[in-house]
Each structure stands twice: as C-alpha cells, then as structure tokens.
Length: 364
Image (tube, rainbow, N blue to C red; front, side, top):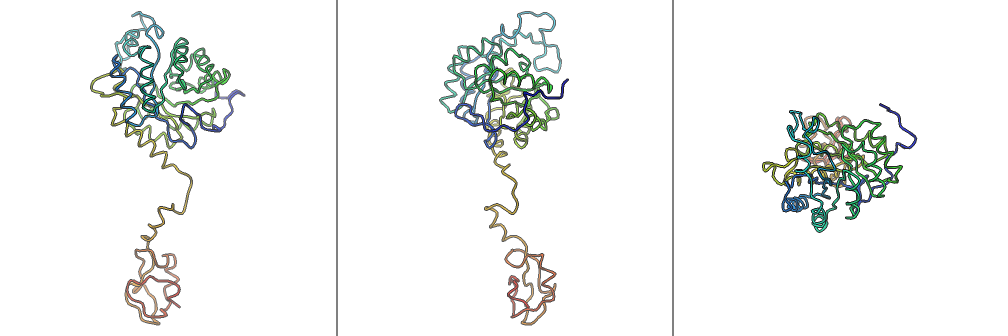
C-alpha cells in the first residue's frame, strides 16, 4: 500500500468553506448535521415523510436518501456470497437482493420527500449507487452528492458524480490511504474541487474503540479537504468529540422509533436523541473558540471572587501588619495574594477596621 502522495494531492487546509445550497460548510462554520434516512421508512411513504418532519424539528441541516434498486445493487440469486453469513451482522441470513428491496427508497418518492425537506428549510440529497441513479438525481437538481464507503473504490461512479460539477461528500470506511487518494484524484481530475471526506467505520453498529477520531485532522492535512464524520456508533458522544478534532459534517442515521424496527434502526437515533446531537455538536463547536488567556469579557465580574489581602483583626495607626491581623480571603478587592510577603512587616498609616481591603495607600 502506497503511503506517499502523488503530485495531484496538495496537503493544505481547505482555503474557504464549501457552499452547498444555502449552507456554508467548513472552517469557521457550525457543524453541518445530516439525518440519514436510509431504509428506516420500512417501505412506507407516510413514515418517510414523518422522518423528514421530525428531522427538521430535531435540528438537522439536511436529510439524505440512498438511491438504488435491488437490480442496480446486486443479482437476484442465493448463490454463495449473495447471502450474509456473518453471525455478528445485523443482517445475518439476509439475501442481498431481498435486503436491498426492503431497504431501497422508491424513485417516485424522491421528489415528494425532497420537496417536504426544502419546505422545512433543510437541504435534501442522496447517495447514488450507479450511473443511472446519478442521472435520475440530476433531473431532481440535488445540491450535492454523497458517495458511500462501499462505493469509494468504484472509480467510474466517483468520476460520474464528479462530472456533475457539484460538491461531493465521500465516506472513507475501510479505505486505505491509497484508496482515498485514488478517489480524491479521480474526483479532482473530473472537475470537482469541493470535496468533503467523512471518517467512517463500516461496522453496524460501530464501536467507539474502532472509530479512531484522531484520523480526522490527518485526513484534512493530507488531502486538503474539509473532513467530517459518518457515525455508526450508538449515542452521540463520538459525534460530539469529533467536532473538537475539526469535523465540519456529522452524518447520523435517523429513525422514528428503534423498537418498531428498520434496516438500520439498531444504530439510528430517535428524534429526541437527534435533537440532543444537533444541540451538543453545535455547543461543542461554539466552545472551541480561539486560543485566549486572561479571561473573557463575561468573566471580568467574576474576578471579585478571587482572594486578596484583607484586615482580619482591627489595626491601630502605626501598628505592624502580621499574619494575625491580615488574611488572604475572598473577595478580591484588596491587594493580590502575591503581595502578601511584601505587606508583612509594614505599618498602618491610620486605624484599619476588620474587613478593610489592603491597598498600598493604607500602609507605610
């Protein structure tokens, strides 16, 4: 596996945010939150539209579909390799063709789903899984495309998507450095410069210990692309943590009710959880700020609660200041504690009552 970069890759930070529809994505922008609907509609258009409505209420910036048919994904056969045998898989025993039939979003639903999302102020786009899906989505004028992890090595598909001239989001689950490099080179050669790469772990659900979020800044530095996270873990902790490492996009699967089932329900968030995801990811972004010392403007009033030097026992004029009559206490209106040693042994210019803050003007 090659670990060197071809001349086409220029390791720099993205020069400016990427514009997708009415959203700016990248440096200086709050994380872009995508609700992945996948097949959690369970072949009900009513459920699909309810998912869109709830995603908007939960603070999603966009909803994403997957555009394919069982015939464009696989062959209608139960031959070896076409039935999932991994006992640890959510889909163990499933025939691929039947699984994709169950999980696919009918093409004639796309327009009504997209229109509902747009009416609610969200962007709407999809992952195409073959060239015909790209052509179909182009007719719907999607604002961008997502290339799934399993399709990252499908060079003809990457080239086809890039040739639309629209921004591309590409997941990198399982991908080696050289495979990511090939996908980025292919997209750029086909004319796409607005590329967002998503760190992804292609297990369902994924374990936090397999997520390796420290890869996020490495991807950004290596490929000069904006970077985000396609999160298949349970909960929101991994997504929130990724924001601190520079993730500007968070993609998370979404379901109305996990207990009702759905092909991806086990690792999808319910509406209340997704709302918390949106809120906490944006809170994490706000918390990053910049390198700053000395206290913010809002902290200035809190300085009164620092410790300082105060008269703790009445002092007569000419009396010496000692540990018996001066203490380091709150509040902070007296001399700072760093002056304690200098003050000891000085004398009071006038009588000082208990609770008087020590200042240089009061002592000789």
